Image (cartoon, rainbow, N blue to C red; front, side, top):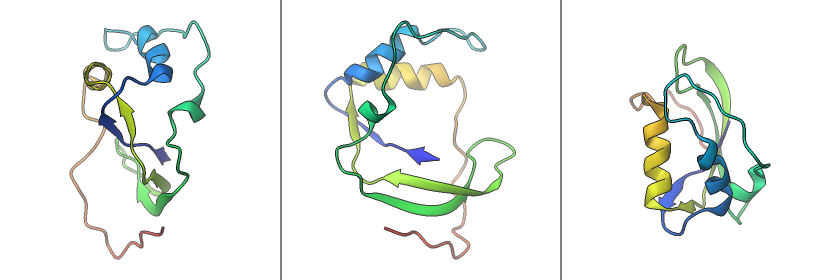
Length: 105
């Protein structure tokens, strides 16, 4: 799993393309009218933290390699709110014990 953290700031043009097609209703799907470059929502820095963790949704399977980008990317307040609204449920679980996991840089 590659995780990119977002912080409130300037609107993200690539996210805007995806967010335009985002369905408002749970269970609905939509097609993008244009391609969204995944690399365009990545931070400039390629530095990341790496650890062996789990999925954030049931069954929360272990053994998932996480790469968490160190540098956050900006998104507007409206973009962040639209994403949170579209999830319809939390996509995380309470913080778990590290169980001696190593977090590598």
